Image 1 (tube, rainbow, N blue to C red):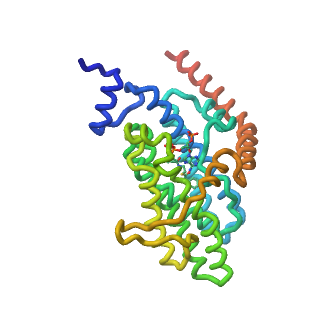
Image 2 (cartoon, protein in one colour):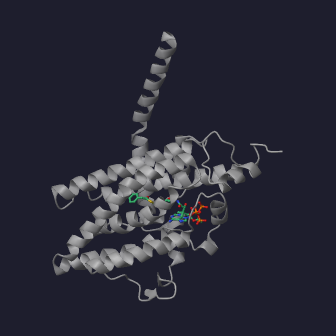
Image 3 (cartoon, rainbow, N blue to C red):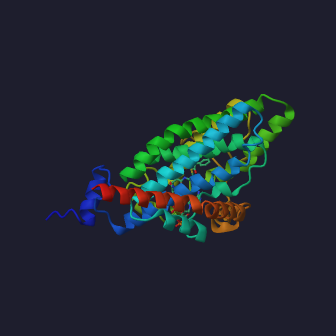
Length: 314
Ligand code: FAQ
C-alpha cells in the first residue's frame, strides 16, 4: 500500500529528486532540521549587517559608500526571504527571534569577529560572501522548495557582493606599502574563520547524515570548504596576497589544495558565545529590536483595521 503520509513515501519523493512544499507531508525531523538551519541562516544574514554597518559612515569615497549601503541592504533582504521560508514550516517570527535572543539558535561564527578597518570590508566581501556563495549555490538545489527558491534570489546578489570585496582588496594591493600591509593583515585575520563557516569536518558533523539523506545538503561541509579553498587560493595569488597557512600545498594526486589544521577549539568557543564580539552583536540586536517594537505594533494594528474593513464590505 502506498500512503502519502509515511516517511517511506517521503523518502521516495526525495530520492526521485522532487521538491517538498510547505503543505506536503514531511517527517518531524525534516521539519525541525529545516527550521534550525533556515533560521540560523536568516539570523546570520541579519547579524552580518553589523560588522559592515560600522563602516558606512567611514567609507573612503561616495562610490564605495553607495556600494556598501546597497550590499548591507541586500543582506537585510536575504534575512527576510529566509525568515519567510522558515515561517512556512509552522514557526512564527516572534519565536524565531526569541530563540536567537535566548541563545538557543546560533548564527554564523564569522560575524563574531570585529571589522577593524577598511581592508576588513574587502576581506568580508571577498572571503565571507565568497564562502557564503559556495554554500548557497549548492543550497539552490536543496530539497525544500521555499528554501531553494530563496537561495536562487540570494545567489544573484551574493555574487555581486563577492566581487565588490575582491575589488577593494585588488585596489589596496595596487596601492601604497601600508595599504598592501592592511590588505594582508585583513586576509590573515579572516582566512581561518572563513574556512570555519562551512562547519565541522564531515566526520564531526552530527547533522550531516540526515541532511544528506534528505538532500537538504547536496554537498558536504568538507566538499564545499575544498571548493572555496581551491578557487580562493588562485584569486589571492592573482592580486599578490599570501594565504596565512604554511602547510598550504597543491596536491598533484587529488588536484586540490591541502591545508593545515583548522583550530576547532576556537570555532567551538566562538559558536558557544565566547568570540570577540558575541556579546556586542546580541546586545545591539536586542536594543534595536526593542526600540522597533512600535513599528511592529503599528503594522499589526493596520493589518487588523484593514481586515475589519474587508469583513464590513463583505
Ligand atoms: N557558525 O552538524 P553541523 C551569510 C553548528 S552566509 C555557527 O555540520 P549543519 C552571508 C551547527 O549549527 C552565513 N555554527 O550542522 C552574509 C550545529 O549546531 P546546532 C550563513 C555552526 O547545520 C555575508 C553544529 O555546529 N550561512 O551570512 C557553523 O548540518 C556577509 C554542528 O554542525 C548559512 O547559514 C558556523 N559556521 O551544517 C551576510 C548557510 N557551522 O545547530 C552578511 C546555511 C556549524 O546543533 C554579510 N547553513 N555550526 O546547535 C548550512 O549550510 C549549515 O547549517 C552549515 C552547518 C554548513 C552552516
